Image 1 (tube, one colour):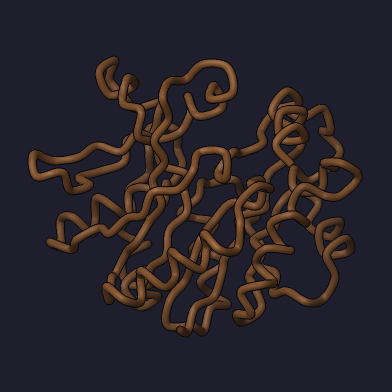
Image 2 (cartoon, one colour):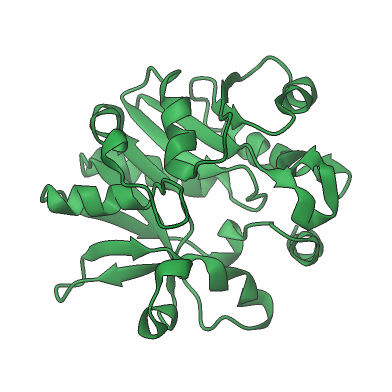
Length: 243
């Protein structure tokens, strides 16, 4: 299937104790954080991945080398803005967007998502993760967006944590932020995503746009530990234990 991957890698490593480094270059067991994801992506044998860089982008390019396509996000304006920059370099029929700070994701899971998207001829397919609670090893997921479903059990929207009501914060089905789209649909709709109260453009709002257009949002469940995101020093240490 004709799919290209966009990896979001524009952030700083400040919260992990390395304000001088791009976040994806902070080391996990002696290797850049993003290298674990790239090893899994390479097993899929797709077109070269598009890596969206920002802070100290030259360091990322030097560390990772010429085997990728690099797009630049000059301002931190959110995930939709980052993906829009990556789309400028995408030539495939489908595009899979994910974060560069998820070192535990496996190629088998990504392949499963791609295959399901193809089989169902979907416009949009995404992973969801169900956690038992937001304590201890699952505390990382507290800040994830919540999956809001309608009466029929279909995905109605994804609410970013900062915009959730008290009731929505209690939802334990979360959004890992890994989606695969029909490229043409995303190109035609990403510019319609509204600016949030925080001044950013969230890719999660593509789900609401799809719903407004009567498009079914297909989904697959994934084990929470696979989509463990590393944002802080304590999460970096936690990821070491999971490797």
